[in-house]
Image (cartoon, rainbow, N blue to C red; front, side, top):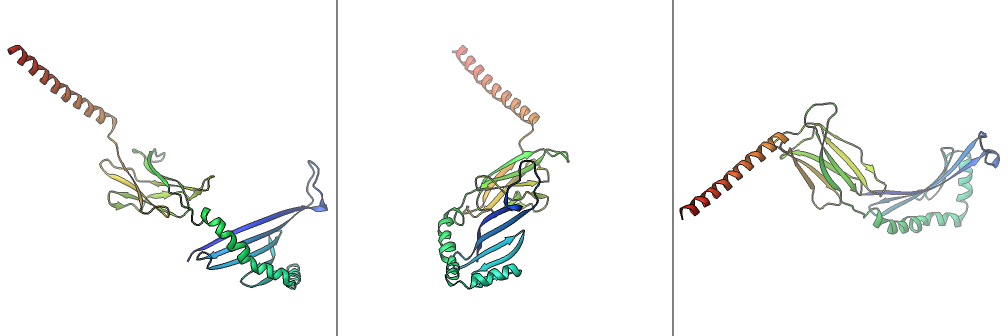
Amino acid sequence: MGLGAAAGAVLVALVALGAAPAAGAELSGVFQELGTSECYFTNGTEKVRFVERYIYNREQYLMFDSDVGEYVGFNPYGEKNAKRLNSDPERMEYKRGLVDTYCRHNYRIVTPFSVERRVPPSVSISLVPSSSQPGPGRLLCSVLDFYPAPIQVRWFQGQQELSEHVVATDVVPNGDWTYQLLVLLETPPRRGLTYTCQVEHGSLEQPLSRHWEMPPDAARSKMLTGIGGFVLGSVFLALGLGFYLRKKSS
């Protein structure tokens, strides 16, 4: 059973004495009045709850809850207003109807961009240097530009999952309404082994895997290249010499 919430808020700051101070003048007081409208959805729109809160200087003094069906005050001022508002039949009918006219109505509009929206992640592995430990570096799995936020990232060495020595950042929102996550494997990679970063996300029909192997070092690569060049040159020399001898004998 899924639970979602949406909220809208209006904040009003009132400066004491009703006028903004001149440049450089100190405020004699600031008062904040905050009103929020919240929609809570369970299992889609099967069960919907509308909540309206009124807060003064961070203290909630009045609330309307559709599950309760009326206003409730939390201090003498809130209780006074709750009694006044609850005695207005037209207002109460309107507030109780916001479950449908506000919450369910906007759910249908927003759902394609929120609840149903799926953006698959891009996944890459890089070798990053370690500032605290010697060795070839550490493997970093970068999981970028995905939506929604829930995601699972796992490291494997061959077929064995590496559950220890794995450090992950928090899931961080991007500016384009997507998220990103970095997962570091703290143990240094070993030559001859395959490492896999596996990602599971709601946008993917099956887990997405990226593989990485330690490349040969530069000296060994040059040596192998030299040996290969020598062998290839010897082959061409033998073929050329054989062709020359056959042509001379003819």
